[in-house]
Structure formats: C-alpha cells, structure tokens
Length: 134
Ligand code: TYD
Image 1: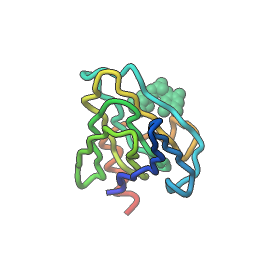
Image 2 (image 1 turned 135 degrees about the vertical axis):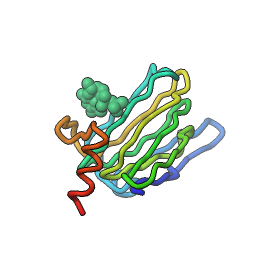
Image 3 (image 1 turned 90 degrees about the horizontal axis):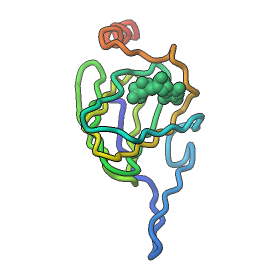
C-alpha cells in the first residue's frame, strides 16, 4: 500500500504547539500546491479518485475524517484526527473520504499543480490502469 502516517515535528511550550513542515525533510516531496477543505458535513463523502503522478500529505487541522485507501488489491481505513499527523498518499492509490466531523478542516500539501487530466475518477479505469502498469 502506497500510503503511510507521518508524525510531524511538534514544537510545544506553555504557549501552545507549533508544527513546521519542510519539503524534502519532513515530507518526501517538493510542495507545489496547498489546498484545504472546510464546512464539511458528516453525510457528504468526497474523493473517489486516484492520481497517476501526484503525491499528497493530508492533515486534519481540526476534527476528524475516515479515509479509505485502496491499491486495487487491498482496501484499508485510516482515521485522521490529529493536527500533528500527516497522511502521505503516493501515486496510484484510490482514496475516499467519509464521516467528516462537523467543522472538520483538512489541509493538503500536494507535489504537483492542479491538473484534472491527471485524475482517475472511475474505479474500473483505475483497476485497468494498474494492470497496464504491470
Ligand atoms: P474535487 O477533486 O471534486 O475534490 P475531492 O478531493 O473532494 O474529490 O474538487 C472540487 C472542485 O475543486 C473541483 O471543481 C475541482 C476544484 N479544484 C481545483 O480547482 N483545484 C484544486 O487544487 C483541487 C484539489 C480542486
């Protein structure tokens, strides 16, 4: 499975906590894009796609969300609910986001600019693409 949870370096003192994320040091790619999701709703799922050439780190800055990650052979679930843990998702991984808590805020660091052509939004196409890669 091409995903992992990464503990982010936390600098904390009596004033609170701070996390600084440096490209190619704390995460394995250069950051070309940052986006975030907010005003999410528990009954609205998102994602349902894979990327051919994109790596991402997703952090739940506030609240929680359940991820489904699928490499075409296995499906695993990850609960993202900490602002000091990043979910790294590599190439060719199907992802779904479910069960957002009210007010959940997800920030995403991405290795490439936005390119809709690079998305695989159909699960059968995703599986076919994996076979063609073999
Ligand atoms: P979408 O890919 O549907 O979000 P999800 O990650 O939940 O599947 O994106 C929602 C909309 O935002 C869609 O119209 C595309 C647009 N969008 C951008 O313009 N730039 C971006 O970097 C992203 C991630 C999405």
